[in-house]
Length: 76
Image (cartoon, rainbow, N blue to C red; front, top):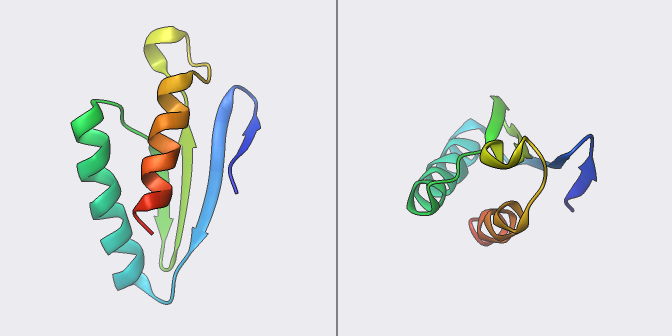
């Protein structure tokens, strides 16, 4: 579930292993590139954490972030 905190949308994803986490990140990267809207994220083994905000709008959450969050959820 996405949460909004400190002007960012955040979600933590857990996977079976690194391979699944990396596959997820690859799918997200392709979707984000199509939108020209790129997440801030980290990956440690089977965990991916994602933060979304719109830099062009002053690093706040916009409709663009909600749209990307939905696309990210569809990458699961």
